[in-house]
Length: 306
Image (tube, rainbow, N blue to C red):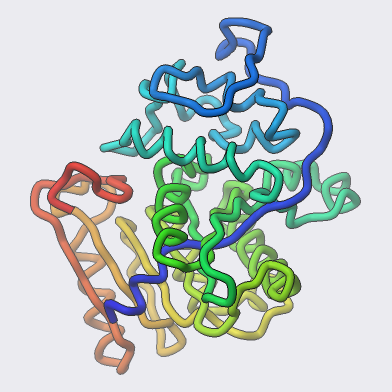
């Protein structure tokens, strides 16, 4: 099971529009964007999003719904329902994206599809490349299906997975249980269709998620991408879930790893444990970890008991 859990992250990037993304005026202290070679804890979030190197996808690096995050600098970033956001990891993520800005983002929908449904403009895959020919993972951040907290709940996971050699993708999806699963199914289709070009192995791919993102991983992992409108018939080999109180399960669920804090006021560790116990009775491999004193949304758990 430990080998399965090692598959931390997934895939990647590509098309950039020429225009610079518009930044919420309340988060702009200046209309001047300085070209930089790297960021630090004091770097302004607005400058990261408006960097011309990121083209039109810079606005997707932080939550599109600005009501759910606060902070002017990378060090000050806070996200609703999340704890233990590590500023150094935030800096590392944005510097990785900057260094790979030419090939780290992929649109999963066509322009025609975006015109038909403008919400699809706020979607895409960020690619954290591992070793050529290694399996891929798709990481899905939570956010209560109200926003996508990728900077703490999927980007860091994908980055660490890539360091271990896995090809990791972080999905930016349309908030909402149904639309999120549809976007994840579409993302899997996209990766499968470009597997050769992306140099990823599609066998035994894994789905990761925290909070709402964990539900996405479980649902698409159990029902399969085709259930949510995808064309890929192959189901995930592993699902990795953090802090979500999902109780439903069936014999179709993938081998599943779970971790949660015992002081989580949103997702009960007992609910998560009972689900895995039920899955285990069906012969599904599972692994469960509960961390004392830890609350909701701890991400990688840097600086905590996790």
